[in-house]
Image (cartoon, rainbow, N blue to C red):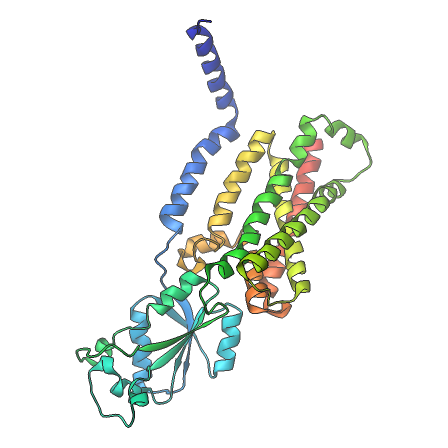
Length: 383
């Protein structure tokens, strides 16, 4: 059978005309590569800088203040809070208000004078005193990338501090203690975050075509004639998928514990509550997409357009602190960013509800607004 170039040309122009009329698809053709370029070229940054940290200065001396300024000059960390005691600082670290704590001991001046990296070579009363680091870092090890960056300061030279050529570097400048994931196992960080990624993908995909599918299958006329209200349709659409999401969480955490020995340190009730809240927020986002899209192809395109930044900016693959400030503001608009902090806080740090209020309130507000918007748009479509 001979190919007809005329028929191929006719189909070619027909597809071009259809694409021209479908403004949503045409827009996605341009926006998806543009968004990816902006994300990977601007927002995603593996070279982490300005990590928010705190300091407990037990010395309160001129040398301790110069030490803080010297560390700040590296631009690896940014000292945002100063604490009076270690317990208060550890509470802030647990709530992820900061990612590390620098503890400067009362005898920091003596330690600097005797430290081998300073080259002072002052006599010590014992070998133990000579080998002591000058200060200590307490680091949130839940994020392995953040922990590795802080650990890079372990052997930070002090030649700028004392203006002497470094000598023996066998003794570390800082002692580093890792919390929540001391072994720095990647699975401990990945498994809880994977819950947010899988729920984001499946929940939005499930509901993004919900209303569109009813329209394409001819069920919309039947829904119009029934006394069911718009909000009741929206709730009825999302409730079945809530149970699917819970099953997925059980599978991930169960296999994560059995195969990778990832513990669940927090309350199961807290875990269930934040999971249900995130599932509801993701489902309502899918419903909003479904009320905007005119067909299932458009709903799929819009879902991909939302999923890309939601996953990449959530802090799952790339540290949140490594992103530019503008990208962090955009990330805060997505439910996945808040759930990533919640799930890691509960599973790894055993946080209570009182420590998670901001993210919980945000997800609840997002769900309520999403349901309201989806209901209003559905009414407008019926009209």
